[in-house]
Image 1 (cartoon, rainbow, N blue to C red):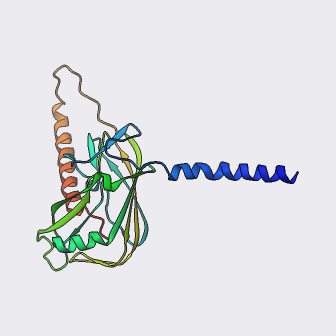
Image 2 (tube, rainbow, N blue to C red):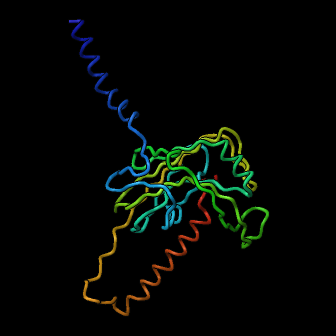
Image 3 (cartoon, one colour):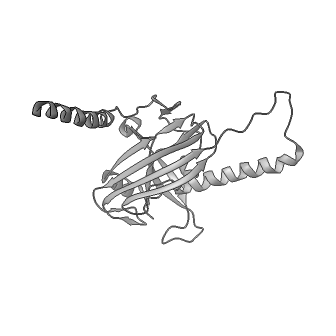
Length: 230
């Protein structure tokens, strides 16, 4: 009886533990991999980053959660980044950091995608006029989501800072910062009939307004595309 009880206990424990072990050992997503009808690649995106529509800021050590809507787009850059006043500060900050990224619960192999450097114009920085444009130095993970499917998704970005980092404008204490972005990709608009028809004249201001808002969101996103603590 005792032997049978032990066997049942072992079976129950195995049932509970093994799935978790298998999930933890699931290979991280690589460039070219698919997930939920979408795929991932590196090499830069011609489309806007997700940060044009969703806040990229880690507010404090611990977990920050944000929700946002993203329009239907052919692709979306989803890698997080870090900017600084100059290249030396950016490089020293980056060296003190390790990053993790998860898309819809699956880990992304960030080293496999690599990172890229770019200039990032920004305004409203400490020590400068409110409207003064300052060229900062950005480094961002080069992760592009191809064919984002309509509906709810979750992007989880984790930053581990082994020491206090100084970007020339702010100082970020050592610690672990986690940003959970619950984003909803909107459904694509219905296609026009293939009859050469054009939108009614009264619809033109609406289409122009939507285009203007998208350009404004992209501009704001590019100026805010970092993981800086606020």
